Amino acid sequence: MQEVISTPFGRVRVEHDGDRIREIHLGARTSATEAASPIAQDLSRYFHGESADLGRYRVDLTGYTDFQRRVYEETRAIPPGEVRTYGEIARAIGKPGASRAVGNALGRNPACIVIPCHRVVGANGGLGGFTGGLRWKRALLRLEGSPIQ
Image (cartoon, rainbow, N blue to C red; front, side, top):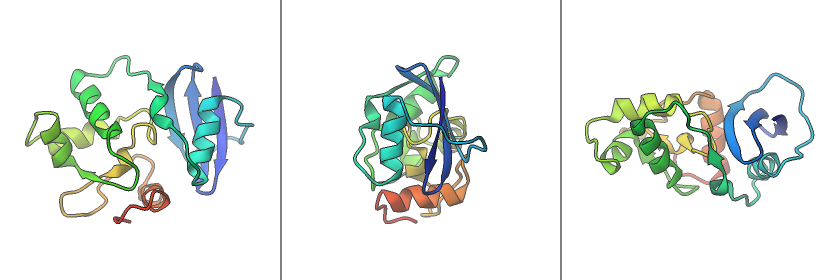
């Protein structure tokens, strides 16, 4: 199933099977649909600054490596309003010195927001990269009350 929700920041497309998320795409160009599924409703609540338990949803990681899965699991543990550096994620999964590899894994994240890669920043305090673009990353960090914006 594919749903497109309208948010204060732009449209967001979510592809899912009702149980698992396959992909979340920021900046969707297709028309918004009614947020009928629980997943789409929770994403809509999140983007409007309301409470939403996005951690309860599973993400389809078929075809992803063990390293990528570990990066995503560690990233999911970052609470809203907090950030970690790429290096901190690398150390947390037992791969110190793998900051770039962490960044590459996050660049392939199929479900931003649910796997909150926007909460991962550069060691110098810079935003680093973000598949949805830095405008989205700043907006998401601001929405969550992060000190880095």
